[in-house]
Length: 471
Image (cartoon, rainbow, N blue to C red; front, side):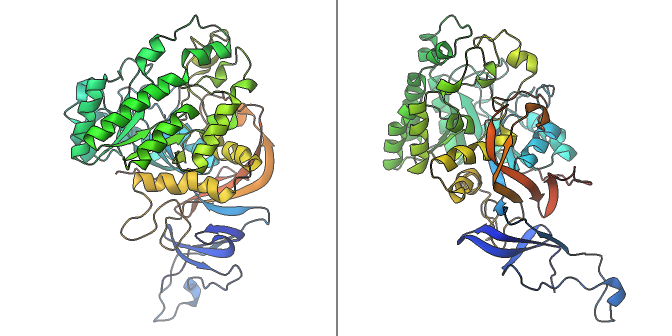
């Protein structure tokens, strides 16, 4: 007989039937039963009670009962995280990033190929990434590869080594070791990736539009937004759509910030083209009207735009034009982020939001009448499906609470509010655009394969390590 080693009882467990009272049984990291909340669940026989036909066992049954104000949801899957190790570990590393992820209810992250040194553009660089993550990872970690001019024609090697797909930039990336592709090179990469059925990820800002929008920088936030206008995104996305039309490659638009791009994506999807898109918590929570001049903690590329644009992004999520939400956690040192006297032209662009993604999206969505079920769909279920992690060998995989699913679970208190203190966040550099924000929704416990990796009550002794994932 198979006995559970963990039972979590909650008045509200998110299942395919919605929120229900249930007892979730976990055995060896997998959900093996979902029973009525007060079901009597037999544990393994005690060693001192063993009979000749009942061998003793060292397994013990752990039971958790969530507080009445908490719900049980599947762990989040964040497809867009810049860990930066090796090479720029002073910006962020696997130990700090994955602790932040666990504290935010994120149980799976996929690491971007930059800004580490070397970037993940070869099998050797991928192996260095795996070695760096190793025993440091508190959550499951997978890896994207990168496509740059120097590795075109060799992308199949990285694909065979297990990367989940290939990121490209159409405009300069901000780091010299990861140059952008020209449109001719983008098409060459797309042709190559389509041959082996891979995934192309695109930072879609057109360099010519950006070059034509350069201004003097300075501390004016509106001037910064003007330097990266919506047309940079719409022009680039038009180009990507044409490449998809010609090559059949599966393409994904990263960190969509402009609502003006939505009609293009909607039409492409309506035509049956294999194109998807994500947006980010900071675009959904903030608007340009709330960002003071000189507040470079808010700088990201593409930028946070105005309130009318934010409403369009929420609408795009609601109608399915935008497929899911990813953090684009892109940290840097305090000096790089804040050390330029408020000059947006000089500050590093990137927002550290991994730990706060769920609370930020839930806070903003709740105010718009969005249900928690939908937020989980956008931040767990759909990203898991996008990565091919939602079902393996006929089982439910990640992104759901179901029999056969991985027991990556989160106890979440959706009505508990808290004031963000950047100094208390788990990521390495204590800088965040969310510092001082009053958010609603607190992660109380995170389980990885049925074992606690985060608890608000303590530091979780004997924290397990996450698996290194391959496509």
